[in-house]
Amino acid sequence: MEENVMSPTPKKFKRPDQKPLPKPNVDLTASEDGQMTAEKVRAMFCNPLYAGISANFPKLVDDETWIRAAAQAIREHGSEQWLVNMLYVLRESLGTKTPNADE
Image 1 (spheres, rainbow, N blue to C red):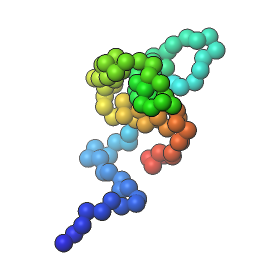
Image 2 (cartoon, one colour; image 1 turned 30 degrees about the vertical axis):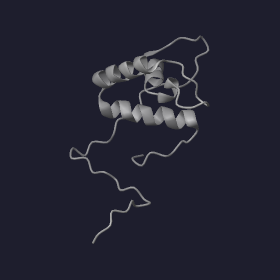
Image 3 (cartoon, one colour; image 1 turned 180 degrees about the horizontal axis):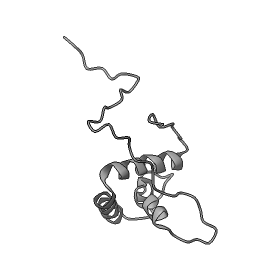
Image 4 (cartoon, one colour; image 1 turned 120 degrees about the vertical axis):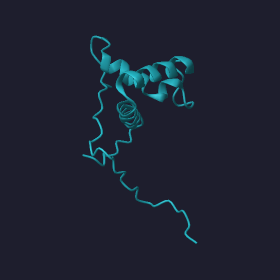
């Protein structure tokens, strides 16, 4: 009987279309003039830390607003782009810059 055991090394998923994942199209840098850009707004609404996931990350936006903004971004930019952006902003925000396996 074969047991389902998680491998310590994740296997790379083969995409049927063989296209690489999109690059992040968000901006986490602070601007000196405080100006918001589309890239900065995308970064804010794909980052679940803004919805307050722990005491270390207080809620800056209510759940409904965050979820509706995220759903709109997924409709506009696609789920893969949104997920790539979310991983990027989480890694940057938490200081866990893990190299992308595709790079």
